[in-house]
Length: 366
Image (tube, rainbow, N blue to C red; front, side):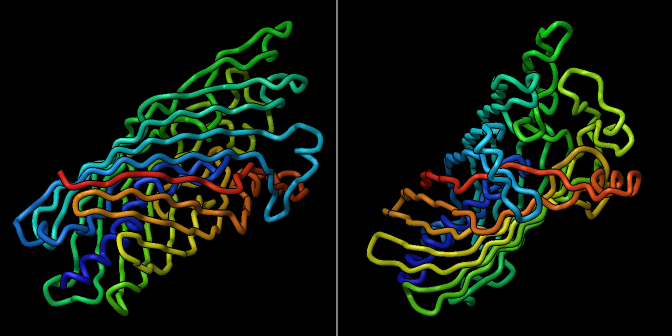
């Protein structure tokens, strides 16, 4: 049992990364999912009647490569017209483990984003817009479906939660050279750097693992955010008047999209270190499970290889994970399809993606 729990530390950190996992690497604005998977990494906390766990995770990426479908638009970098996003997210997650089956968590993200472009600032000069502040808070309840005392090699954990609309979805900054006579206009920043999406969502999650030995095993995660609200009422025109095309295809107002994430991989423990390697898919779909699908969004997905390493002590763990993009695909949105129907010309927008993201964090028992 001692060896099994030692191995579980690595699983705990991998599942713990679900806090910030679903924040895609670019203009596909997949946001922090919140919540801490309460895989118990401390043997005594499952038998002592309860424990508190705290995690702080930092995530950074720089998106700058544009894609239409899976095709990279390399000319955007060559011409200097690409959009560059710098995104930093700091998630603070507190989890209460009630017993060896049930736990509850709250995740509080703080976001700091910058976005530079030419097309948002008159087309001739590159300027920046910024956003900083509290993101959307998530609360979750977790339950192990199998009795941990009997299911020593593997288990399945289910979660249900709420994503609250606490982050600003109307954050504004100045867009240069867009007003009368080349003046600046104050307007909502791009959807990709808004602090929230304006919707209250339902989070669903399944985490699982299976140990083949005391130091080797597999893990898997499925996460889905259901966003019933279709649009949040915020203009996508950056302080100006929306174009006739945007009004016709419905992209003049920002949408509140669903999102999902899938992770699978393997862990190997050596002493105080745990090494992992896996695959990760993050997706913002074109259509939602509940509610309408119109409004401005950049749907797409990223498939990444995800190596990671964790160093653990009795009450304290430090980890880093670096998902490296292998497939980036900006798929057709509903407004794209409406424009195709209206004009008879196939329409598909683009999005900027990152090459990789960096996650660094600490987790400890209080």
